[in-house]
Image (cartoon, rainbow, N blue to C red; front, side, top):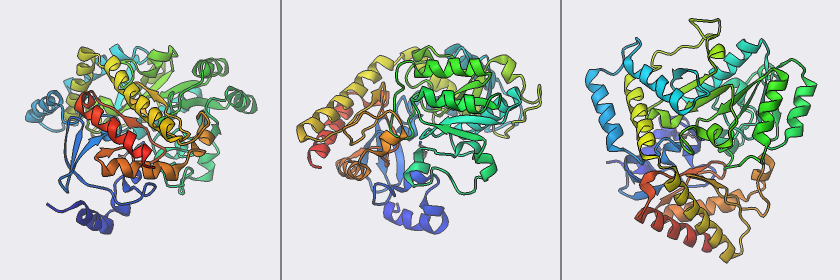
Length: 425
Ligand code: HOZ
């Protein structure tokens, strides 16, 4: 087996930056990425034979831990029948019914292959429905890499210093109005300055691509009432939060009902899936019923549907949320305790099985606040954890994920490592 070092050297020759998604390149934390050959439960095994406790969880999907036997069995059963039909298949119907049951605001749903497709299509649909062109997004929110949404974006775009990507025509970017998160007055000003022109407000209700930021009380309700008052649609990007924090996502927790929701990650059970859905009268504008076009050769792919259905059914059966929250609180407690003991100013936002750490004394409410965090110190913290076998997201502007497989020895060890990493900074 080639080592990670050799694999990366080969990759650099044939893959831009040696990676198929930028944050994986480790550029903001230093060093080079490790290559993973297998994963099970809370653990990744690298090409170098190292075992790492994984808090990236494939960037969210692995809520039941890696390689869960039930999901593997569902994929194996589907595989026996064929890998793709290019026709409707029974799994898609089950999936649509399941999504509606868990997220009641989704009257109808269209499956696609990634979160990027889901948000891109939801925005197009909102434009088609309202007959308006402009959209509002929040600084630091990342909604995938379609043109309209790569403006002041988070995740890898922010990590690598390109929050406004090259290649996005200025004319497209002009249709995207960016306002700070947690600033209701800024949204009011955007609506007032663009009367009758805003098709939609798109938001990660808990922004998680800039580290983790939580909404101030009432902020999401303000988005809902402003959209309603101004005839714009409210789009929740729950690609990360959907099914992760509650069966019905943040909209269930916060009791705020969006018009459209974008989903991904967990609904694919680890295979490539996205979905967008919402009120039937809006969704019925999509081809073939209406004039808004959206399509995909592999949309509703039977293997991905089978994996996703198994993942969602497991959630319904096991209701893991209180247990996951307890694990999240353990990590938060460990990080806060270590920072306090060390005399380090830090914020540790956590909700359920999502957390991040900002090395700053000020509570983080928006992108500006996140950027005040000491990213260099984060890089050192990351490396110290990795040296001791704990893998955190390789950027100060991502969110860590916990799975049900992290209980017991894994969480004990991880908290010990994070504690010692902080104390050694
Ligand atoms: N955009 C993802 C995190 N927010 C990273 C995906 C990946 O690198 O796999």
